[in-house]
Every structure is written in structure tokens, then in C-alpha cells.
Amino acid sequence: MKCPIDDSPLSVSSREGVEIDFCPQCRGVWLDRGELDKIIDRAANVLSATPTAATAPEPSRQYDDDRDDRGDRGDRRKRKKRSFLDDLFDFD
Image (cartoon, rainbow, N blue to C red):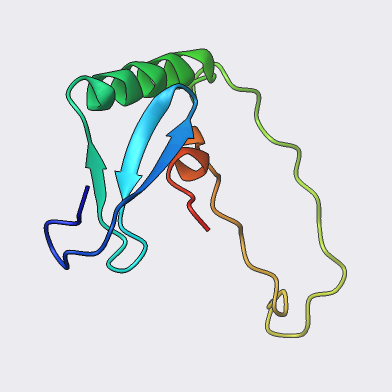
């Protein structure tokens, strides 16, 4: 099968029971009938299994002694919480 955008051959990856057609050139993703429904169902199951903010325990507060006079924490940045969709669509 060829990419409808740039006419290069599509690659197929099977992730968690869902076959995903993707173009390695333009990074386009195509799903067959019913595959998006499977992804949505899995996302709903994952979201319903995670605790909500009202039921989750409050995180413990830790103080960082490495702050400078301005209150900066240096180069540390918060990492974005990964979802199962990140693993599903990670083709690298």
C-alpha cells in the first residue's frame, strides 16, 4: 500500500492488537475500519483505571536545597506524563 500524501510505501506496525499503517517519510498514520474504536476503548479503560484528582492522595512536598537566590531549580524540568498512546504511536 502506498502513502496517499507522498506515494512512498507504507509500513505496518502491530501495537497492542491494533495494526497501524504509517509513512516513514511524512509520518502520516492511517487506521483501518474499527482500529480507531479499539484505541478509544483502550484509552477509556486506561483513564477509568487511573485515580482522579479527587481520590488521588496529595503528593508529599519535598524541598530542594539546590535553589539559588532567585528560587530557580536550575535545568530541571517537569517531564510530561506518558500515556499508553505514546507507546502505541512511537515508531522510532
